[in-house]
Image (cartoon, rainbow, N blue to C red; front, side, top):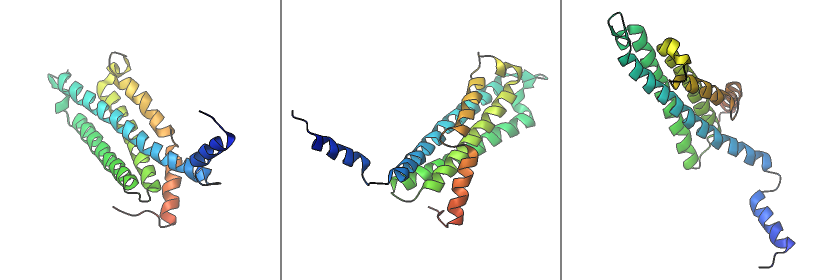
Length: 176
């Protein structure tokens, strides 16, 4: 097969798409990455919830499972609620993307909520595990470290708040 410079030029043009639009393309990639990070954070948070739930049902204190203690129940309930709310925002952002609609603010909302919910849930899982949470025998210590990356990767929580606020001020946040 012969290869000419014009063939390479055509491939480059197809890759670039529109000239001088690289920044917009980069932002679209960030938006997609934010939904991916949100989904990853939901997995971490859900794993932490499942581990904490199982541990709370096994671990006893004062002659009964710690899952019967109201403080533990409240932590578990809040973990599930925050993670479910984040899941709905993540689904919404993914739906808008698939539908070809504007979704930049929604991607940031999903990433913000999911990463903070995962960090919160993993912190509560560590609390429920107590001293055992520091042992590598239990995965919650790793979940918490990984969740922190979710708050930083693809833009910090503060960056997500700036993206959301700018969209709100511009009237660019709609509803499904």
